[in-house]
Amino acid sequence: MPQCRWCLCVCLFLLTVLLGVGSAFASDNRSIFAVPAISTSKNDGQDFGLIIPVLESDDEGNLVSLMAPMVIHNSFLGVRGTMNYYHYWSAGRKVEFVGSYTEQIERKLKVRYQDPGFIQGLFFLDVGAEFFKNATKRFFGIGQTTPESNESNYTSREIGVQWNFGVHLNDVTRLMIGQRYRDVEVQPGGVDTEPFTGDLFGGITGLERATILANRLVFQYDTRDNLITPTAGSRLEAYAEAVQNFQRQSADDFVYFRYGIDWRALFPSSSKRMVFAVRGNVQLSFGSGIPFYERSSLGGQSNLRGFGEDRFVDRHLVALNIEERIHVLGLRIFHVNVEFEVAPFIDMGRTYHHFEYRQFNEYEVTPGIGFRGIVRPNVVGRVDWAYSKEGGAVFAGLDYPF
Image (cartoon, rainbow, N blue to C red; front, top):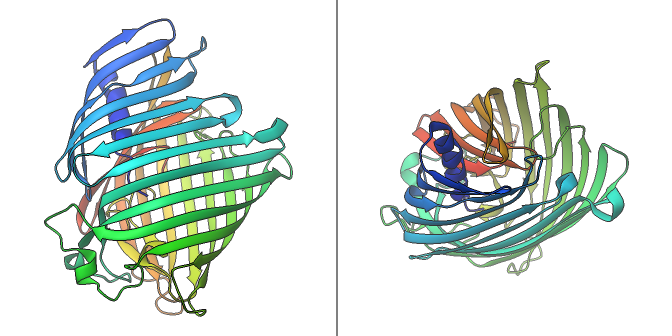
């Protein structure tokens, strides 16, 4: 998935308000801000521009909607115009729309609807579709020992549709089925300083077009006190996928399989001003003919944050994330309740081609620190910086990394 660059702007907006920089125009339940947006990313280059968030809240200060038009200049791709819109209802129901057009190559259109309490709370529903061209994707080859000098760049042109439908077995247990459709073309990238992936890795599976349909079964046990901004509880998710690539002609590599376990837990202090968060993740892929962008990967905004996205790619992965979320300030800013957190963290993990070789050796470890602005119960804007043997990396997101 392409990185959500505007999320960094949301964090900067929250911090800018805290410092008293920028201007605001507020009515009883609406706040409009105009602030500079400056960001940098290991893969995506430097952004500079302007974002104008428009926040709608209810009388209690809960966020109802967030609209964020922005104009950004990117060091690789030129000027980008983006419109982001989120609308929130009670019990976690929300709709999301993102549209973006960049001077060179990149395009994005995304819509998504989620309802954890679909049909009087009996079911879970998540549906979405998107089209995008991400011109700053990187590929270093397959395996944990690929050198940094192997870095290559490509554009991922994708059309995606996904749906998930779940049944609440009880208050904390859910069984879901779903599908994801993914049509991918690898095209020349937008980073002139790196070679094209197709030239450097001419024989890798996935350079040809892939038309993928994945059928998914998920078991989820979730005791967290909130789906988006939790402070206590745990979540265990086990999943299995049978994936078909309709562009493959051979029966031997037409279908491959993916299995995984994702465990997350939060341990708050008595005041909840400090929350110790931990995540363990194991993913296994089996079969031949798996495109390189469908394999397990480490690096990016949710694991091994000291490396760029998809830095390590192979069949399987094991990852562990630990962070301490420390509440530092809470404010009511223009009719919206905002909290600020600092979160030192450590990420570790590695990929495997098979597990019997050096199963517990040669893990990558990336320490770092995160800064978060939170509008409960629906929004987390964050900036995370981490260090690795290849230098530092900065990532932004709208949501916690786990």
